[in-house]
Image (cartoon, rainbow, N blue to C red; front, side):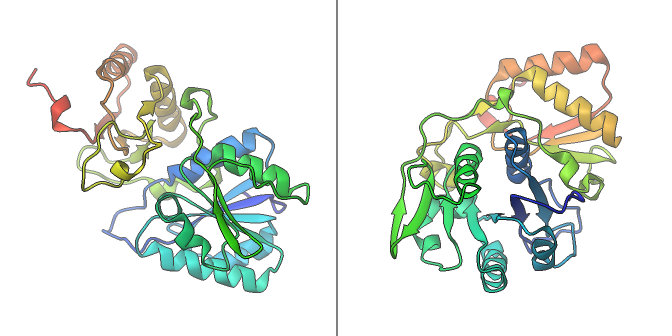
Length: 286
């Protein structure tokens, strides 16, 4: 979290209640969103309740943002998000509260039945929240924005989800500087100073047990190998890490991308160990 006191929007990652003795994972949803908004001139900061013991409402009071955006998964974190939203509405009457993330994407109408939530953003939030903030900063509302859900005269409206998705390779770097990144460094089984990276979105599969099968808008796409290597090198050079965990649904969907990334690591003699999640169909004995 930065020291800037005047904000347009404060992005909050609520406390998740999940602890295994390890440091929290970097909240890439809000990190990428903050980087995008900042690149568009929106004054933004991040509060991660998983690493910062401060009272979220005291942070809101100090920063005085026009809006707060909460990243909400389905699970116990909902109760934390509701608590923050209700207390914020009670204390700061004019503040706008926006929910994004998996839960409002899967259950938009249900979330908007909560009076303390003004808007929800389904699916990817970058463009929708940028346009919404542009309207709010002018003292207006724009109900034409795709991915947006809202209430108007007591009725709930859910707009269609945008078909076109942002090009990850043209997006700014995640806003790592807006969090205390050292609190996310972990000692894992393969390296002593490990951070997570997220280099792709979506999944090509429709497994019945996974939330992705219900997201018709979602399709797999990724940073190219050069940008993956660029981000890894940045984290190594600036934070002294010696390991990366690629924390995403399917890192190796594009084998050519993975091979190119490996070639870059070998050619540069970059000494960073890495691990990733994979589908068994992508594994080869060789």
